[in-house]
Length: 467
Image 1: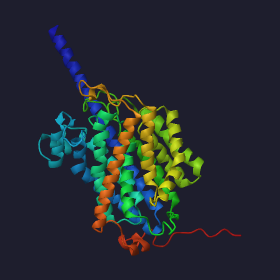
Image 2 (image 1 turned 90 degrees about the vertical axis):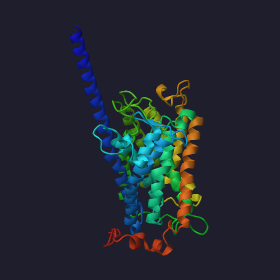
Image 3 (image 1 turned 180 degrees about the vertical axis):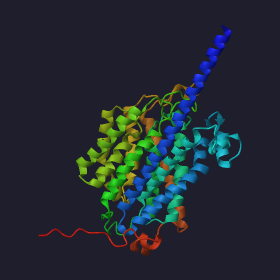
Image 4 (image 1 turned 90 degrees about the horizontal axis):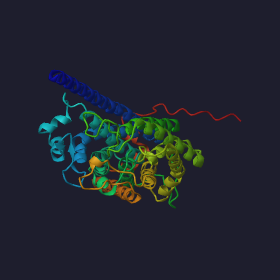
């Protein structure tokens, strides 16, 4: 009998081991697939910004976007990931991961020493860290692409790359450590909930861009002497609209990667959860992503009938509901997203009236709508647990979502973005590395900065209609 029980126990243990391995392999594959999907976001930003540029600047805008993607990846590897794990409680090394203390894990990333350094390179005993890092890296790269469109046609390439490194390697990562981490002080103390990163990715990047724009100044010809604004339309609206739709496609990967997949690699259970440990699933994303996109398009169409703002409305609608995609009922998602679409162009015009030349409306789409989304969650999800019990220190109560907490989170995210953007741009301006010379801007950046022309034989123009 004892032998039979022992044999049965061995079989159960073997089955559990196989099940854990299957769960871990699924988690690894899941995050691996989010990475190419998120790269589609960057293909979209590339088309979006080149189309929104005048023909004389099209390739320069594209080169700038590609370089941001390339430089943010090593910046996040060598520094950004360390910031995320090092500073959730403020500026102390306290977080933990895979049974390793935050100090050890963060320092191993920065210095590449100790046993935990193996988690930052190929390791046959580690099936999850690399792909989870890859997903976070693409979040970082997205922040740089958000900022990129706002500053086209007058920023120096090297200066822009430096700004992208600061934003993707530090600014948004600090916001994530504080508000997108189970130990984050904004979560533990204020109940901040930002599942789809409306504030800590989109708003941080947008207000970083606003800080840069304040120092950078408008494009030549944007404003008249009396302060009125002129339209400086891009050369290829179909290209821009297609790029915006590609960004929407890529957002499926972005929001997939906001889920934590249960399994052997995690201590959070066997089901999908948010980064805070609260329950959700892919069904919630399927309902709410589609309703958010459609609501944003419809809202913008009702107000503008403009194809640029309609497609921008898709992003605005999605960002406005991103904080609560794991919580909202689809009809509520649709209503909030319609509101974002309706507000989009008027909000952009208010910013333009303040003398800010945001070439693609990035500050409004990602910043204004990101903050709007955080506040809507504070209203409609008030009282919802911000964390699961096991993420809360013993003896403490579970923090809950509240409007006050979401306001505090929004203020912190805006401050991180705006202050670091302003400071970085001011330093670059003092060094003469921020803005191109006036003559170069007038001639076109493709002419003076890129050894190629987007349309060397000119852009085909339809003949006028016969009378």
